[in-house]
Image 1 (cartoon, rainbow, N blue to C red):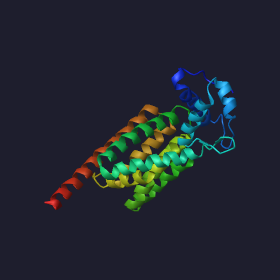
Image 2: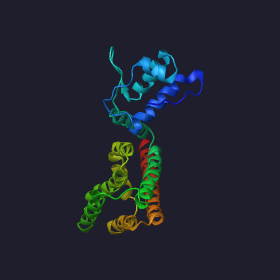
Image 3: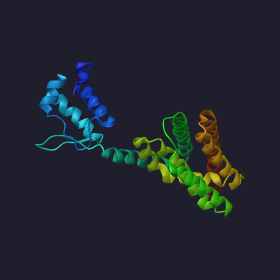
Image 4: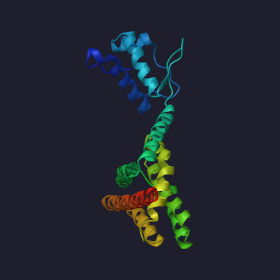
Length: 249
């Protein structure tokens, strides 16, 4: 294991922590793998054992390692899921105090999903079976005028696209917000006069463009769809505020 040379003497523990974090997140250090002893790390990085202990404390706080008294520090990278889950709980708490954060969620969705489309159309991945299955479920819901089923299938379509990217961290993050995103889709779908037929056609067009590797076209459609939903969401928020103000009078 060749360490990265520390950049400054007053931040040695940060350099050590950063190097080990990169190795853990990249998979170079696997889950359950014990780290070298503090003495060995200190020697390899030319730092004090105190700096090593401070570095391990940072990694443990991030949920990347587990320190055991009298034993070796071990990689527990699956705790990254718990860390991201905690992050999304914090985000949900913000949503509950200010609905404007929901509009910001749509901006995050746009950034994530347009990049996913770019990846899938540039040869970096392929749509999994869930995308087509969700599109078919939307078609069925359209034909039976099943609004609730259509919304669920709509959300599943976007979820399956994100899963198709094959990025585990992104998948965990999106999964944690999935329920909230579904509710946002449910709210925004009730604002416009757009029919289920038109909504299905939009998704079918995105699907077809991704399949044909039309990256720019697919990204433009995805961007427009999410931006329109954000606009509908803002209308819904304003209506809810107006109704609340009226009831408070």
